Image (cartoon, rainbow, N blue to C red):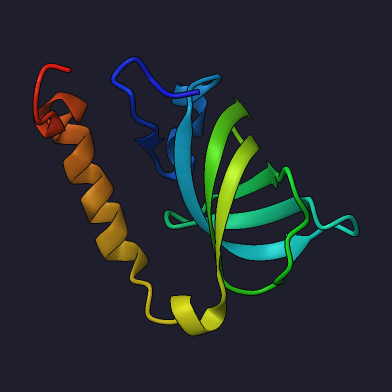
Length: 118
């Protein structure tokens, strides 16, 4: 479940519609968690609201999620796996710097990061 280059693509929430059915990584702050713990609303680093469907219930209700999955609409992502960062680990996360990093990745493209041809 990775792109042809062998990697997930890191994106912002505003880029979701360009990556429908591709495999992506998205980071966002937890805003709402459904009763079953699997339906979660996050606010991405570029302030977009995205609904994510997790494979397992979330144990924390504050902090950030890094989700790996496939966008199914411009505001919904089906998640294969995720990393949960509670407030004590995400309090100093700098969204603006992360967005600048993603802009740099977009300009360079994934081929710039290949170490060899394999």
